[in-house]
Image 1: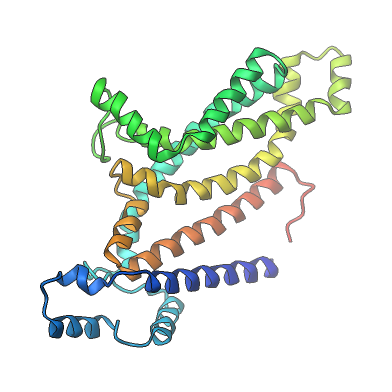
Image 2 (image 1 turned 90 degrees about the vertical axis):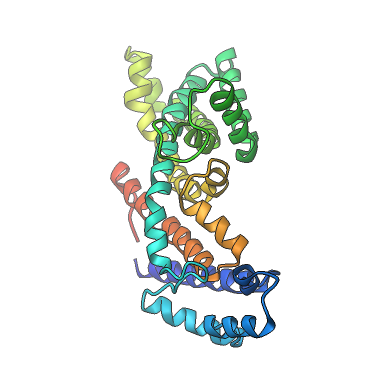
Length: 302
């Protein structure tokens, strides 16, 4: 337990440090984004001093770490709002999108993977794996606009963007969940095929147990053990991967906030958003470990 805690803390410090220095080293001055190109040099220097950007970078870094210790992420350079308030305002939208995409991916991947495993070597297996390969290959930034073009502009079935209208989550969730469904389907197939070759499965068949009962009652539970680990990692990836999807669909979540903050060189918001994503990864991984222990009591938690 202590080792995991120390590892998580070191990881967070590494992420925070890397993001802090990278965002300050990339070209662009937040003062120019706020005042514009026509501002006088004296006004620029006054604002830079007010925001604390005229201080040496190591001093700014030390102040930022000091704020983190007090759970203070600072204020946005543009809106002047606390970064924590901005994150809490946008977080529900990202969680909603990620959860819907996650459930959609599981509902697609589980039967698809089982079908491919139980019909191994047949046209059903080839078709399922072809679909999963397509799902992995299609990037979000292409799939999203294509779904908008087809279902929103041509058929008029779903809203183009935003989250206020009914059904607005459908297209973003599909865009975000397709690649996850493809990855999970392939994992379910390979894991289930391995379990179906075990001795106790052959014994169950010899006793006359139906194939459907063997698959869904005896084999699938053991086959899902490695899938659970992948689910935990991929759910954390959904929170990070929603950045592109939220931009495509103008979904008012953490991802859209991050992109806008990067474009505006809003350092505190960028740092706070990335920190939130990193913490989410660590929390999800820990919950995955706990779930793994519930599913398989033989696993010991350290």
